[in-house]
Image 1 (tube, rainbow, N blue to C red):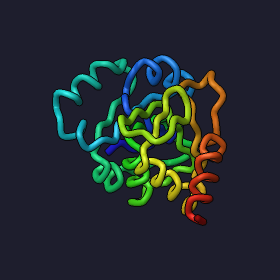
Image 2: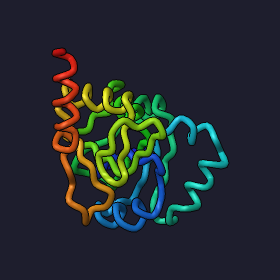
Image 3: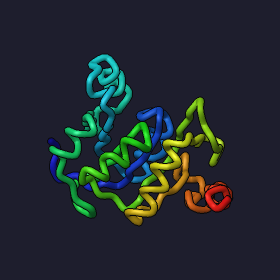
Image 4: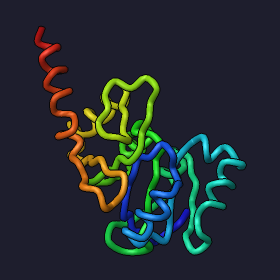
Length: 175
C-alpha cells in the first residue's frame, strides 16, 4: 500500500467523500491523499469509481477495507504526504484502532442514524452502539474525540457534548 503518508486527519463521516471534505478539509490540512476505509466501498467497484471521480486528480485516493487497511498500511506522524483517513462509522474507526491503527485525535463530522438516541450537534446523531463505542474508545485509549463539520467551526469535545447524557446514564445504573 501507500508509503510516506502523514496522517493529518482521521475523520468519521457517513457521507465519506463530499463537498466539506474536498472544499474545506483538503485545503485546511493540505492533503495530497485521501484514504477511504470502508468494507462496502472496497467491495463495490461502482461506488469506488464514483468516489475516485469526485476527487481531483492531483489527490491520491486509496480505498480499502478495514482489515486490509490495518494489515497493509504503514504510516507516520509528521512526515510524508498529508493524508485524510475517512471512516463512515464510529465502529469502523474503533475496529481499526483495536487492530493497531493508532491515532490520538478523532474528528466526527457527519453521522446520521435513524435509530439515534442523542443529537450531539446539527450533523451528529448517535445510536446506542455508537455511544458505547465512543465510551469504550475514550475510556481505554485516551483518544481525543471532537465534533466538527468544517475547519472554520469551533471543535466541540465529545465529552462536553455528551456530559449530560453520561450523567443520566450513570444515575440510571445506580438506581
